[in-house]
Length: 317
Image (cartoon, rainbow, N blue to C red; front, top):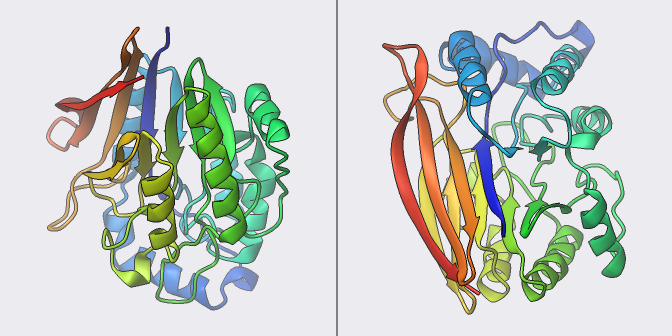
């Protein structure tokens, strides 16, 4: 029987931001640097980030799921520093990652993270065997990369989906692309047939109307159709910097889409303080019992504490 504790976090926007080179300051990066200087550096605080690191390391976690946005404008200095942080935080077999729109700020930055962080977004051995069985071959092509990848933990399958591409100025959109959607349909159907509990991870909200169109997943309607038709038990995402649970009904039972706030942010008038989720997935003879524990940053204590326990439900075999 599988008893699995998954920690999900997102949108670190690692503070403070190192200076990019003059050659990197073109187009969208100038806008991003301006946004950081005006507002974002007052939200994504180093003391919150360090408190998050300290707290999550004290928990009994089987695996970390990081749904993107580690950097801000994808400069070489940011990616170099973030690569060192990732490797110090957890080895690749302990953490799975999917890129966010800030990680893919430009095509050169998404190419860079696909190179430097590749071992955090590749299949495990069993996942690779499943793709081989399904005749699915992944590549490192920019921007969509080697997705969806599969990692297996007992009877739990984590499916990493990329929504990251270099969006136009003043936008923060995402896209999966037709080829990735087709692969996802095949993978989800196979994993369901084989009796796995399926957890899909993506950066952007997976459904329409969860965020304004200038920040949305461009093919979220198509993804909703996949989830309605084939299902996944859970979909975890970030991007909105908000905690939210949305339910989709499908013929196999509910699909729960769970958004999480930033892991490095102080509370603002319209966004909550930093938090991360622990998802407890327990298998019995009858099915899967799942609970969510939220740990939230309390500014007065400069620490994360457990603020909410939410039973997510029971999935029958």
